[in-house]
Image 1: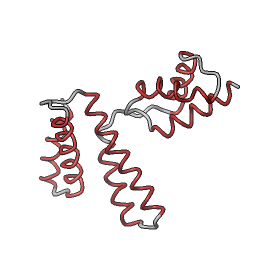
Image 2: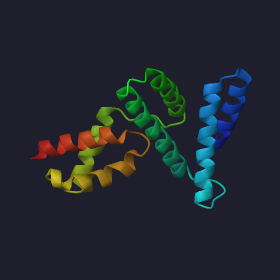
Image 3: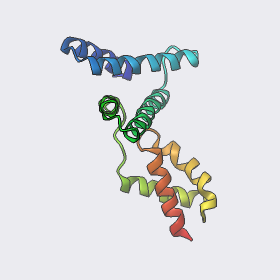
Image 4: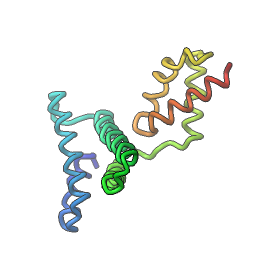
Length: 151
């Protein structure tokens, strides 16, 4: 089942259940996917393009969550947290820190990285492999950690 079909089915179910929060998030995701398709002048997006859109939407919400928490707006933080939970349902299963660490180690070996100056090369090798399956800030932290150990 494609992502759009899943969203349509879940939207119908949310309407039946009168779940306004879930319905709002699903509509927003559908709109983002449709806007991306229009931008690329395509009828249907590839799985990778859909994943890019979902990742972007999730990142925006996580950034908003951080801002709301810093501003002491727990009411808004709770709302965004609910949205994050709904978006995460459509994301692929996230890699564990151990799995991610292995990918980082392999990538460091592949690009022959020896110092923190090679950070860009390693990130360039790791990110396509873990797209949508890991948080970029965690990847960054692990790459820095492993590069500092190679010195």
